Length: 267
Image 1 (cartoon, rainbow, N blue to C red):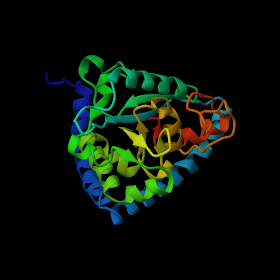
Image 2 (image 1 turned 180 degrees about the vertical axis):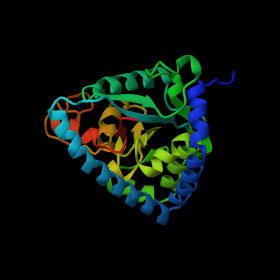
Image 3 (image 1 turned 135 degrees about the vertical axis):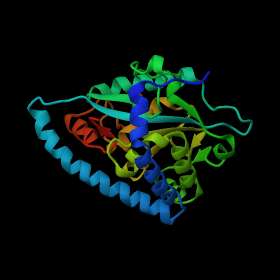
Image 4 (image 1 turned 120 degrees about the vertical axis):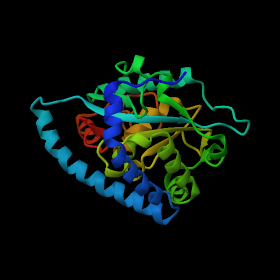
């Protein structure tokens, strides 16, 4: 049965279509291995710096109790194994997203889907199966097992990064404008089979995605924290503690940094 979308969704999509079309053309350039991927990282760095500068002003307002709720849009893409079987069960993944939403609420940041939601659920912004999408098995096999740190950057420069970019463009076309121009750019969570020696990986502000092994779904909020400019901290109760994905606390400064991310916006 074909999903029906609300009238506001239809109007908004129609109005933004030309902008998303132009942005998708730019994203195709960004998907070119090496040159395009380098330009994408450079552009993301510039946009991140601008948002952080504005975020310092918001931090001052935060101290005076001006604390509007902001939004973080996420896309969720489940890869398939060599037998074309999805790597993760939706029930476990939805539970992990619910936990993530609870953790980010302490920063007054609401988790929302990057994908359009069918009309019956349009006003129900809790994680559900409609948040989830599935990658083409032919593409999945090229990014099933990935690396982190410097090797992840090198992989992103190559065909792996091009594949991530292509999936984003195909699955979340109506957020192309946001991804290119930065304001409210969604973070895509790719559920992979393995991240070498890690429970997940994010390249921070360099990219618009994180990779999470299907056996380490609890690391989703930690890696989203990295995507929103947060670094590791030695405190074993802190969300960014590098040796555990089972903790959730954020300091006031971390909240300020997170809320200044280009991914976290009011609109």
